[in-house]
Length: 200
Image 1 (cartoon, rainbow, N blue to C red):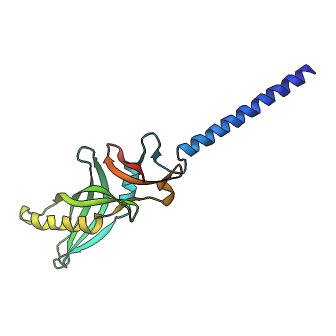
Image 2 (cartoon, rainbow, N blue to C red):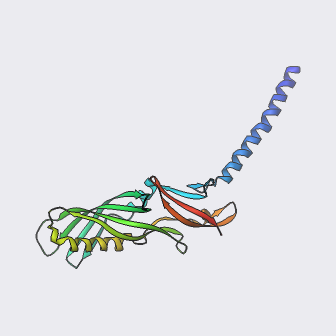
């Protein structure tokens, strides 16, 4: 009989412990913002990895632009480089140029476009800001055409990447522990970007 009583006591102990553990886990989930992917309660930042940023930019490509009504520029395979020192992002893309007035075959090259980052409160989005041409390399094109190639690069930067959203926040992502928050400073790191969250 005593063994049954002892077993009952052990079960009685286990239940409160299990309930306490479950409550603790639930509390941790609420504190950490389990529904808020990428939010770090200890630093007050949303973080986005290089892979997440890469996938966001890939959504803009492939793309084809026309320059001066005669030159078609086909752009593919974007690759991101993170510049933590300059707090900027470089997007390198493969470019294929075709002149619709000439029977010559297309020429291939690469464009490197450098962008800052900013937050737009109306769109609730982190955007690529003020993209500029960093480098243009096209196979088999003489150096005297560099001005035209840079113009093509500027066209690509403005048409494709200016104000392009890397992440659009959902309304629930801008509420932490019942408080309305607002993204602030954006920092480029070696592994991604960090967006500081400030209480309104």
